[in-house]
Image 1: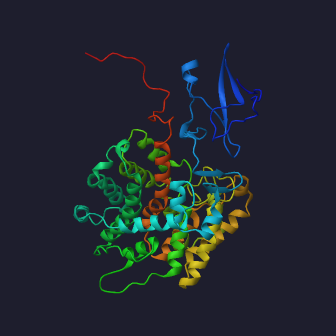
Image 2: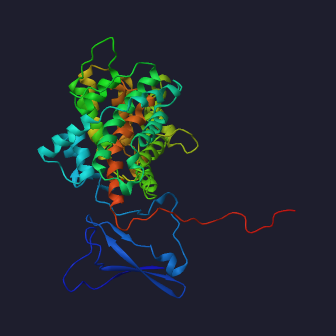
Image 3: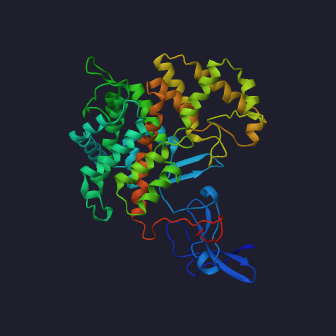
Length: 447
């Protein structure tokens, strides 16, 4: 039995919040048989409440069991706030809608990593640092020769990011990294170059070196799509769309890949290795591969000349294996705020490019039918960020096997911000989840 008790307010009137961890005004009493255990209750700056069970096993011998960490907070963080019921996403307090409308990816990266928007001087210094570190060591180009042309770009990217740690050995021990800002800028800039080289490797084209006269996103598009035989002009609308996509993917609280970065970092692993771990975690179809699954679904409907209403009925049939990809979210029980932004941007981009994509028409029809069906509304199954992002990447010219690479490029500043926050947390310790053993009991080896 668990009882929540409100303790008396402190004499000085303080209440506990996420910025002041010393004063606790509430506690929970857990009753196990005839034992009572007091557990502190923490309240975040947005009113979220958590019961601190860090001393539970010591006091009672019990642990909690929470498959998938559905109800478990692994840390306190000031980077990203999500209210899934209300459909709210904020980076460092700024609504995602405002950042999408007014910021760019470089500025948003600075915000996530440093905690505040940069002054004009700070922004220019940060931008110039990213430009200076866009090249990779020439020896790393030869690494690509060892990968088969069929290698997935995510496999190449994770290997190459880990390879960066062999060239910047001063970062092997994070506690001895005396210039972490330099490490951060190297990563943000070079991962973009590695991602584009991974794409060129997969299609057999020569690598295109960075052009530091271009913007962050413009330079990436230049390295992706320019060929030596022809000039390439960065389309401002495509650059704008890419900026938006990267901003919307820049952070999303303690998702699988971010938790992986933190898990690896808790062992005092260097930043390059932690980011490589995050990339491999993101690769999975349940995480970063979701927008690819959406595009595959739309293509199946189009190529099979499916009636959308009939497809929706199959989705609702519990005996059918058909699932509606791009709807629903582990956190959001409302419309994903990023999906609203991407839907409008998708319309704008395709209109600008003059693209008539039948998959977009199918997506619009799916959304219309699903949002007017009580089956989906009652289950809080609304479009998520993956529903339209794949169509935008497809319009830009980015192939499906690069979708997760683009996700990684966008999520990079969030991963870095969480790694830095964890590194500076005095309460951080190596992550070591418990388990409940349900295997065979003690038995003797046969002799």
